[in-house]
Length: 278
Image (cartoon, rainbow, N blue to C red):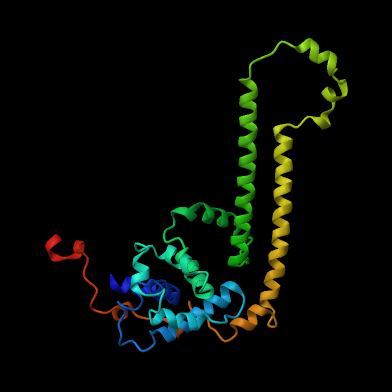
């Protein structure tokens, strides 16, 4: 079992997972093996800086200073303050966000990541629709943005359709009033309005117009993303300048730890794995 876990663990972006553990005020580095030389606040502080630059496209000004306050458990990073939040780490970081913006922004970004696939299955399906064998050179950012755009358009269309159905429902159930003669005198019917095909919106025509609108929006979004990608690929761009000194954590050999030696022996065995429960 451990060998299988090691195989998958070696492919993961390990610093991101370790930071999620370390930025929890209750855990920090408590359960990690203290004898591992390249696993410390100093080491993970480097990756903390990397993710700040990668996510927010700017250099930090006091990130490591705030991180040192967190390491020393200076208020509000002390156990007493965190204890008032009932273990809710997200609310804790939202509380201190005003005074520790850079550190809190990373923590909130990490703890805001969904830890299961249930809520993103639909998005994966949409990304598979966009990233096909004939269109397989799109990078992750572009596919994700296109999926979000497509989801936004579909949501807008469903919302309009729902509003239209509600309006038709209330019109059908409205109490009829026998004032047709009076209405005809005040508002005579124009034959052109009845016979003009251009004024008749059929469901087929409506779907075609929506499809054209969606296609135009997707083309505009693709064009915008291509411009952004060109800027990122440019060595003189801000992103390139910020991350030149880094190797991506997923492939950085210095950012790999073995599960066998990563954790200390103070971790209690879960009850469902104990001999008594088997």
